[in-house]
Image (cartoon, rainbow, N blue to C red; front, side, top):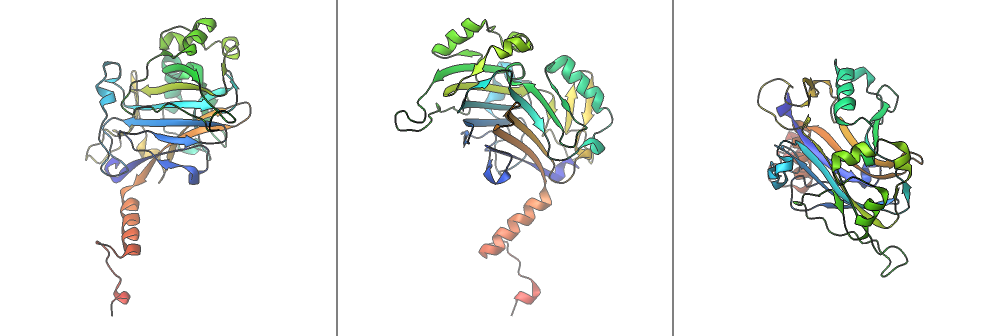
Length: 311
């Protein structure tokens, strides 16, 4: 079944798909997203990638780095909030527009318990709601957090927000830049990423931290558990799976056509969305049909006219 699909990754400043751009997965560049509440540069890497745009690299130099050789994917980004947000309000995670409770595979509750126990204890939400969601505080969910400096914003300089360019192949390291180093010291933020995640499971400590307007932050979210693309030609769905310690959960057989896994960075107190990244499984047949329709519209190679089109 898995070989009947292609993965497409898009990103944008809101839930509205019309604002999204196709992400060049494993490519040499990041995409820039600029919305009402934040500006961001976003890079996505997927190991063994088989997806869109066609011809995308199957891997990235990122996965050759010693600290990422076991990871399956990464969502890395630089972002700049356009208003100050409490560290207790900013969350990162998954949500859905429609109910998924009737399509959750057997074993899902066990998988969720393992995730909350071993991977992200701060994760919280309701997958049985009409609008399912699982969010974790950004401060305790991101594997890597780097605090940067303030940059020119609206009303300063040429009036634009300026985010340093993030080289796609770069591996973001835990730490800080400029006075971002001092902020970490003042707040007592551990230097190690895992210790920082544990540190910010404490709500009071999150409330003592602000994501400041006009300051650049870099983050990387990655793990070895969600296997998007280790596909073979076997007629089963075992290769698209959530692979947890001591437990594996097949996913593909429970998805509908064009199902999406959406990651969102948002303010949970106001509902404001900073950006979203969407992973969508698209049937190959649909992609081929779209390509044929595009060629037909252009009268290009591969266009096969219908019988009644022929004189």
